Length: 480
Image (cartoon, rainbow, N blue to C red; front, side):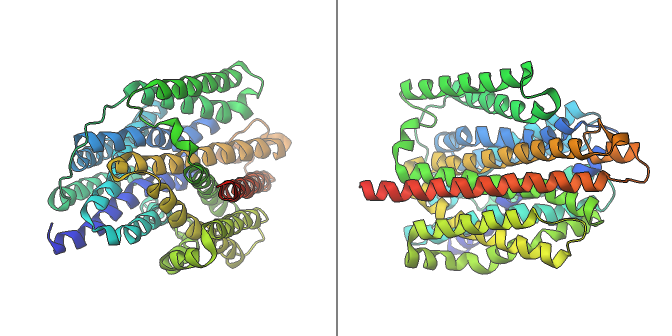
């Protein structure tokens, strides 16, 4: 591979990462617009519009990484970009919620094929000495992608329709496919059997778990649908584990999680993305409803989160060598958890500079966590399993994102519904509540109360999970 092609390959792969990760974040900006649209989705349906993409993305990213290992990473990456374009086109023209959810699922399938194979292509193309820096750059793009999705989504949604958000992604995905076809090298294939049954079990278990979480506030935590969802999730996860343990060629060997560093890094990645995408989900509505921002200003309002990522990302490796991986991860969770708890104190009277300061604190945690945890996961598996290893990273990220949206959406909705004034009781979205109370008296206050509750839960969860990650890492090192 020529030096010029190798140099251009990194920005192209990074652009693909920003595209698929940015779509996770961008749709959060459209939640208020979707809630007031002719589709009239309920509160649970709004969560599913966001989470369907993320769930499919999370659950199929490991099979897609394995498919890249077996059938060729470049070919699977190109197929993924094509599916992504088709899914966003279907979402853009959706006449109802069901078709929109189908489009989101198809887009998630495309994203699953794109993400793991971008890093696998890069690791095949660059010299061994440059791989740590390449991994760090790629990992940073997953953080920047979320913020780029907010900023770009705000620009597109300023046109007045949520459909523009999906329509604009179609030509971008197709252009990326052309560039990938021209620059990406063809990598060696590995004869590793795929396991579609394991993939279906993982998808089914994840959907059942999120169904229980999302439907809880509306149907009741003791209702048949919620209890059944949790029970089915437990059964399917158990069956998946036993099936993988007995498989000669497991999709994701559960025994890998005996590696303490890999196990704790995956939990850490899940926790960081849980907090970050919980923030993305409530941030868009908070700035629009509580602060009166327009959709473009709302998209740009999250940008302070990226300042530490851009300025501090290149220096994380040096810090990690000085204070160790455990110290770096501990700082990451301290900053991320403190930032979320700080944001949970915001209300209609909070100035934007004060809000932005807490975004920067949260961004410091993300900056420290992403390259550090990515390096641990990538270094735990052999080069022949680069696709599966990258898929494991992506699964933990996207599953954390899906859980973050589901949990913060559930907590916020429950608190919001309980705090509504009497004439708006029974409403599950701000748009519905405002329609019942023309002057909006008490509705925005109820919404802010719900947002604060959701962010407090997210902040505490990040701190607790971070403590578990650091504690397990410390204990495993002492045991060795």
